[in-house]
Length: 515
Ligand code: KIV
Ligand code: ZN
Image 1 (cartoon, rainbow, N blue to C red):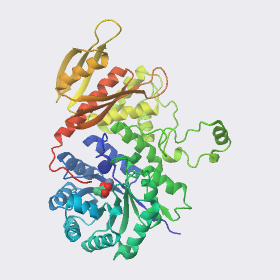
Image 2 (tube, rainbow, N blue to C red; image 1 turned 90 degrees about the horizontal axis):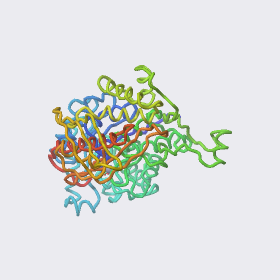
Image 3 (cartoon, rainbow, N blue to C red; image 1 turned 60 degrees about the vertical axis):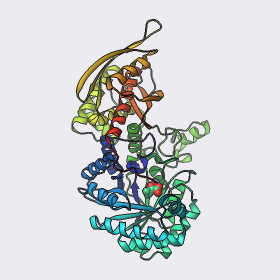
Image 4 (cartoon, helix red, strand yellow; image 1 turned 90 degrees about the vertical axis):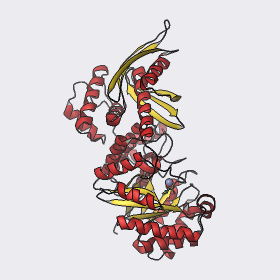
């Protein structure tokens, strides 16, 4: 039997990135896009170019950088949206414009205030306009799962007639069930004119915890593209988790007979870790496939079985998703070559300045800490790829605290390349530290959450600090790691402030509504 490929359309940089706490700056997006290419996704949805200057620049930069994978930009059906997407994709080797409009009566009446006929006109016009720029056009019927099925057939007919080659049927609000979604896909494949010449795509949200089940049911009903995100990040309860769909298909070839993806599964774990370290959002420990406990056998009876034969309780191996064992990897005598190789094994390909910065950080850490673990290396990489377009660069930090005297912190920090230094007192060392950083950066954000974790075990473990700060209604998460938790705190705070600065620079052209 010949194998049919299920395309993996990754929207981590668009649907994932627009969810609270998951925003990324340009260099973070580029680092993730490179990893997605290594992972082998078929399409990278790099952003929503009309949403802001920042989104436009990110799509443009990813399109310039990624040459072997389709790079896609999202656009509503408006002329300006599509022109903007086309412009952002100008230099892409394989550009795709993804245009969408809602098709459910709920959205037509309450959001768009358009008739069904008007929406059909929009679909045809937008797809034709997109086709005037690129050959590869995807159309999405937003809220498809709450749309009238016969109307959806008409919408798909118009989109195909105008030149769309991929038709996406999003479960925008995470409302459908596997049986219902599969029936919808079958219905459209039967009734839409020219259905055999297009790819039906699915895009699910996880409001009822069914996103993966719905996507896989649709695949069994004939859908040939899954839209998903790494770690399942995304609006509200998230999107379909890429790693869960891919490993379900791999692990159950009997159920998904004749179907496969192009994903290099050994890049799944590195992708998950890279995303988590970039956005500073940890993966829940019991998360399928990539969670810390996904391969941990705690119960005695399970451990006994696994020791006798792994197959007793293990349906897939940690190695198959590129999960390295948590053994000592490097120490202070490890050189550049070993460091580079270990990073590559973990899925990180740093070059040039980023590599130099990471190597220096590794050496500094190895001077303080005997055993350098994979988690330490991930923290080093996250630090090194993030720094390139930051407005604030943290220098030296000195904190005085204890049970007598007034805690105070002195910080050196460069703002737009200009060094500054100041000291502040506080009720505790973190208070003093954050006060002095706020005054040096002249920022007025509110600290909402402060959390410290040890990255690995051992008394000399690095502390990893996550802070959530908000300013002007925007919430961001910053993180930092260091053997001194107060220095890690300073790094986390400065990281968060840099993210806020990045958002300030993203001057909105038009706020995207309704997705
Ligand atoms: O959830 C949704 O409907 C979307 C579309 C824009 C594809 O994200
Ligand atoms: Zn979505």
